[in-house]
Image (cartoon, rainbow over all chains, first blue to last red; front, side, top):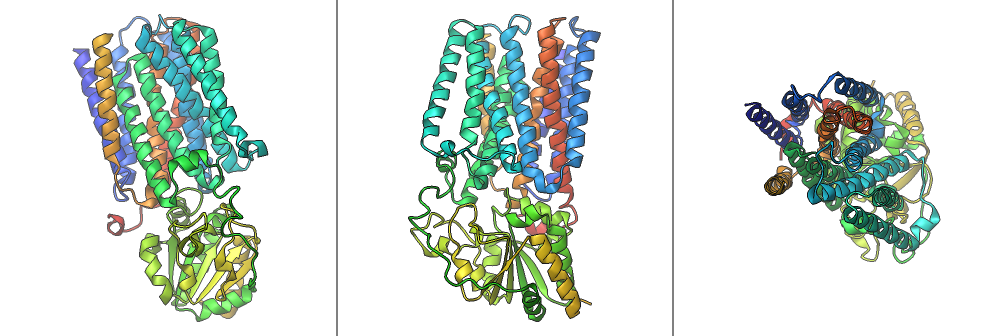
Length: 472
Length: 101
């Protein structure tokens, strides 16, 4: 009878998880869907505990270890989720994801070391353990490297950008394979196991480290998919169908999301994973050259132009996120709106560090949702716009992507800001964007550069606007 | 084991197909929250960790590894869902109809 109860609970949990993932892809239902998935997860845990009630090994000692692990992990999770600033979302997701991979890895290790107690004997269990260890290790080290790179704790060592890295990674993959075969051959021998753990951990580092910052979101999404695969493999190890189905769902959905993100950047997954940084080594072939016609201007001039404008479009980018200038930006746009100026925000699909990141940041600063416009919607509006304010965005406003077939950026969808009457670019210096490619926009006659940290420039701009009496 | 293995393969296959179908079009706004939410769900390995602890029967290796694994998984699950909720809460004031394409 309890079997049926368990099946019923598992079935409901799977259904709710599926509805949760589905709902998360629609704005209207997203928040409820997330809560639904959380409930489903709770239900799955309760279902499992109920199923084991009365089993002799489910004693107070087991409970003590369960409560201990739960408290430590749960409390740290709550604290991290509440403390972390919205600007660090991508690295937070990477950290959580890495821990999910670690969890699968540890369960597989436990099963490899104590196969009889866990009832994980036989070839199927052995292969599942191998898969779980391999994918779990890669997910863990890869996610941690991704997080460290986004935080700026790690940079890519030069040899990692050369072709040598392919040799090293192939060697590591072969070592992992040898470990896996050795482990299956000796039915769980320790030598094979530890070789597999070490080699796949290093492989996770070796694969992630050379990937450029702009591509990191795609990698995190892919690693997220991997952690689903690791969970599914762990499901085979401990014999839980619920785990298999949930892991498979996350794995497949993560793969689709990765593909969607790649499309947004006009990059193929293969070039993200194996191509290294965009345009590296080929930056001289196309789009190189010096800037010849840079106009820089003062904050005062910018304020005067804004005062006379009727339609203003803001293009936020990575620089805005780094400077954490979203609140200052909101104050600037508030005073513009108070002066009757029409303000909208153009959101490029990959603006910021992660698709959707800009929307999250601007929402945090209380920007009304309907003012955020997607690229396809806003592009026809640039010719009728007086002023465009580009804040720390670079490659996504590079006209080269449309005009220069030799440019590495060619074909990437971009915002046509140059069609506006005046363009102000707020930038820290003349350094290139992620792609390392010259931005033709900066050379255009209607573009003026405002050099400085986005937050400081916007703060000064706010003062100037106040002096001019804009919006009050 | 043989029959249940085939059963498990079916579950794997159907789960993967379901996952492929679940998200077709996602507005870019939701890429980060969706990734974060899916990531929280991948913390479902709590179930594996719990199983390891429950079946341990006093075996210290299983108890310790299971408990650490449970901690990591719960960190992923609880942190993941909360952080997703925090992100999505910021969208809650908007009129949702416009985005629904």
